[in-house]
Length: 457
Image (tube, rainbow, N blue to C red; front, top):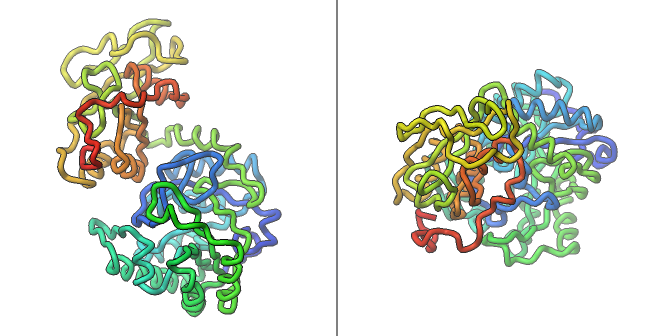
């Protein structure tokens, strides 16, 4: 069996290390393959500390650059990890490429993954080969009847499972992943979300089972009730309930008691997180061209071509915008390409300069129009749209339902509800500027909007 990595510098696995050793989470994994009843990734506040939220999503190359710049500001970093904002193994290609780049630049860095385990078994050898030293698996139950009450659905490839079959699949994959990680010399911590009335009487069985398979540490995390989730009305367990669960589980496996419910972009020491302070740096790196021209464009839902004024569910075509040649002078015209309609776009489609632009700077240019997938296909419509827009960093629309917003975000595409002249808003987005001034007014959605939560929303 391979040698077990040293955990004395990992702040999550060794409490003493948390005082002097920092960690950075690299948010390169936006997609998730499980919908947990306590998770809602729609909300992202810089003041909020919980898994699933981040101030930006990075490509592997951007993540490597971000880590280099973080280390300049926080030399106490000893661990680089991937913890979302989705699941690392639902984004296996990006995760493995990030691992490879980090290992090349920082061979002595500890590397950690936090996963639900569903997509991990096929990649166990690759994880070990790319230098993963520690892993965290979230295992909330070892009884499928209990697990079935905690997961809304589980997606395995193109198949979506629900109920007990979903829970059985999850447990099988999780235990396979745990056993495989341990066999490859990777140190494993198990996270268990303590949910009153569901698994609070079951945690000791989880501890006994995972300890028998080789996990070395368990982190019992009290439920954090989150708005718009099936478990939003379940009260957070009391400190006494958490303490009792840890006491019972502690008879089988060592307990972690210093967890901070870290964000997917956490950075710094556990007791001195700097994710809010370094959020501008993260966003700057996310906007940087990673050498592959990743996501250089912005899609726009517009009725007549001049204003951002159409609901995404109603749009049969989207404009695609990018940066074109510079203006010849302040107030000059855009030397753009030919629009999809066939007309020359010599004068652009906006009025006035893009906020913050100056002579000699690139300007927004309408590149083409793309037909959207046909309505009536449910979530598959939005997965197809995300694939069609894989070179776009954002979609600008007057309004958008939560289902397409969540699916597009899983694919790394931000949906921004706004109003205004297309060129002005696109220019602000491409320049990385604040677009709050363009926010759509309530009630500004067209009358054709589907309010019933169907495919159109």
